[in-house]
Length: 226
Image (cartoon, rainbow, N blue to C red; front, side, top):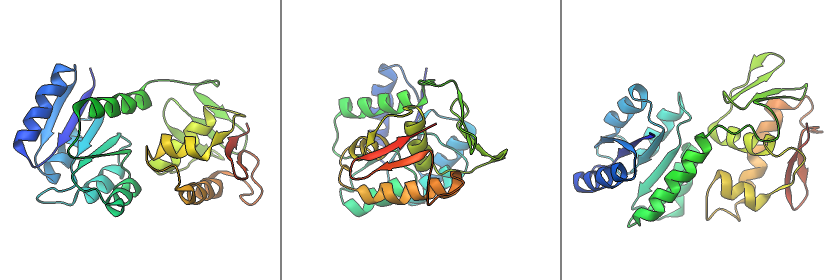
C-alpha cells in the first residue's frame, strides 16, 4: 500500500481527498501547513506528496526546496495558481508534476499512478547497475559514481539520466523527454533540456565538450551510448 501525504490549508478539501484516496487503496497522511508537511516528509517517508503552494506559514515552493535537500519523493503540486511563473518556480524547485484547481479526481489519480510507476522497480534493458567506464549508474538505488566518488544530481538531472540509461542507444525526442520529466504542457521548453544536459555532461563526462555517452541528436533529441 502506497502512502500519500496531502498538504493543503483547506480542511474540507483535505478531508475529501483523504476519504477518496483511502477508497482507492492509498494510506493517506494530511498536513494543514508547511511545517507539518516537512515533519511528515522527514519522519513518515511517504511514497508521494500532494502539495498546495498557498500554505499559511511557509511558501509551497520553499517547502518543495527543503524536501528536495534530503528526499527524491515525487511531489505533485495541487494549486489554484495557474500562471506559468508559478509552475516554473515549483517545477524548478523540484516538483514532479503540477495540477491546477479545480481538478477532477480521475486526473489526480492518474498523476498518482504515474508517480507510482516512477517508484516501481524497473531495470530496463540493463541490470540494476550500468557501468560505462567514465561513470556508473545504480538504477536500483538511484546513485551515480564517477571514479568511485558519489555524484550529487538534482531530482531533474536524475530523471533525465535515468530515462536515457533505461533506453540505451535509443533516440529520446525532446518532446518525449520534456513530457516525461517536466510533465504535459512543456513540449516547447527545449531550452530546459540544453541547460540540464550541459549540467549532466559537466558532472559525468570526462570531456563535456566532446561527450561519449550523453549525446545530442541535433534538432531531434538525445541518446545514451553505453
